Image 1: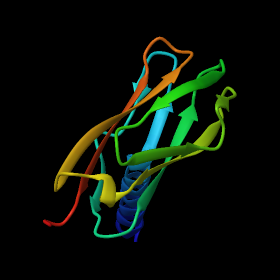
Image 2: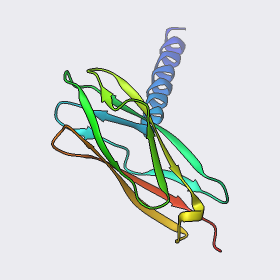
Image 3: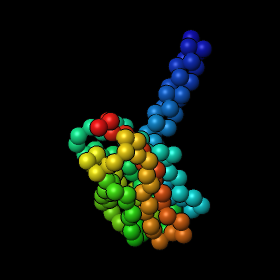
Image 4: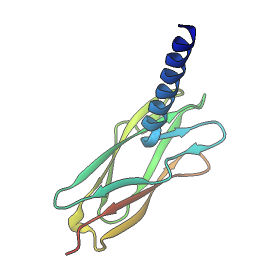
Length: 132
């Protein structure tokens, strides 16, 4: 009975840790020492319509972070709710792509977000379009 209970508890802990890791795929964390971004935001295959993904920018610093400027490549757009992140707050960031403005079937680009911090936030984005 105790062994079964222990197995159930361990499996629940593993499940919760895997879920929390999977949910952080679209999380950008700003800490005191670093900016943690996903390796690549893969938007998959886009056929005819625009597609959007939602990320969360989380300020884990004790100081505010101000978003000053956002640079997007051709075919991409970014929308953010708040440009001033208070300490320990977060905001959604939406990245959109219009396949009509893309010229290649595999597009790998960078979105650069300038802030009041020394280093910018760099988001690597990948999208595929069907062959024309």
